[in-house]
Length: 545
Image 1 (cartoon, rainbow, N blue to C red):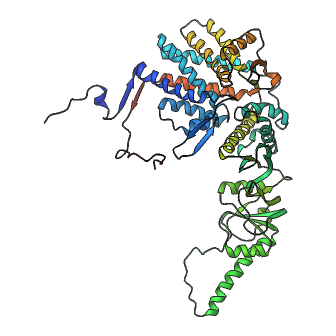
Image 2: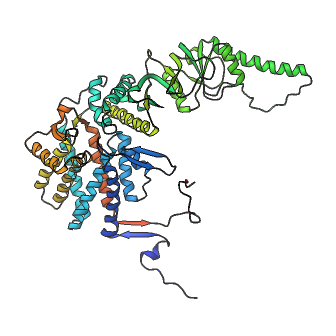
Image 3: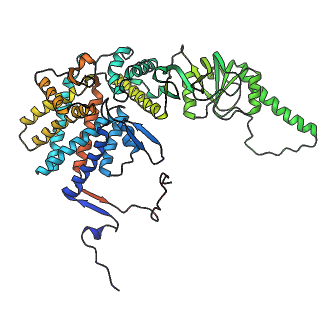
């Protein structure tokens, strides 16, 4: 018997097929490299002039977007260190709904600067200490930059809302933000509860219908269902609604039974009793005052026939979530089985009508008088990908509204805040004595990435703009940012570009945390991936399953 070479060292400890990377060069620099690649992808999409990315995911679905959260979600990042950045971006998207791009790009920039420091001979732990000091100082400076008087705000005043929302929407749909913002603000203000802190994002729905253009977009107080009414009655005004979650049909018995029929009369009577039973049920519903029946399941032929006879409008909503929202809009209670509903279980609508929008028949449920809890933004556009992108812009706007309900403080936008942070942190780093002063200085330098990227994406000369921004800020004009349309530096309060304080706060915090997490890693040990036989080569475009 001839044995192969005995494994030694760490190889002997772990199963074969594992990977083990350690040391600065192999682990840290490689991790930083992967994160830099990811932030290079998102960076060109930063700001209003950001480029779109075309991402095709593993199911062959096409995304054309400059929304960083969607991009990093659909990329299916494999590298463990880059995944940390993706998670930071996702956390930002879920917490605030905007600023995911800032998080990922800024974290990448921090790591790139950390790599330079490591090459200069600084130990990662010193960099981490420096970065932690820097982020704490950043948070202090951010609080000082907040616009005076912005902490008190009435979230029902449209101008105030638009002022805070416009930057988030413009970064997704530049040039169309005015139309979109006024739609989103109207929709949000309609469904804003007594206590704005309880604002629920789910109450602003989006209905995407092909055809038309942005100027055809409207807002409906109530819901827009993408289905036609089942029967022949297409319009009902001021009606009561009964909602049946189980479907409107003759119910089969729970137990199985056999019916023995001897003659033709008995067979006739049997089907007649079934008819009578269904009629009795539908009649009971009609007598309760309901004019509209909403079914969560199938609608039987016979049931439909009697609904027509009693002039009831029938809608079918097969999605459970949609049914719940419908109940919220109308104030109805979903009943399990067909029968006479109590007066309390009935909901109320101002009008239910089937309308044709762009060749698609939709049912519009309006509820304008009562305490309205759902409103729908109807988006129109020429292609699916444009509609998807518009929807993302609306989502961002709605999330920004939720964030401003909790904390309405604002800081100057258009890279004014970033340059001021960079300048103040630079000064702070000179006062530090340890080695971490270099890390703080690099952290300050990382902020320059934002004005630089904004300028580059708009095709301007980045160096010129950054130096003139620094000059303005040094002379005390802390609200000077970049006006991308004219390519000059301007006071942001004149062009009304503001960012929410919470958005910046969380984005920078998550970015610094993610960067420190990646820097803390000094070894990567990967076990052999589990799995049966090796994967066969799949034809292009096929899914793994």
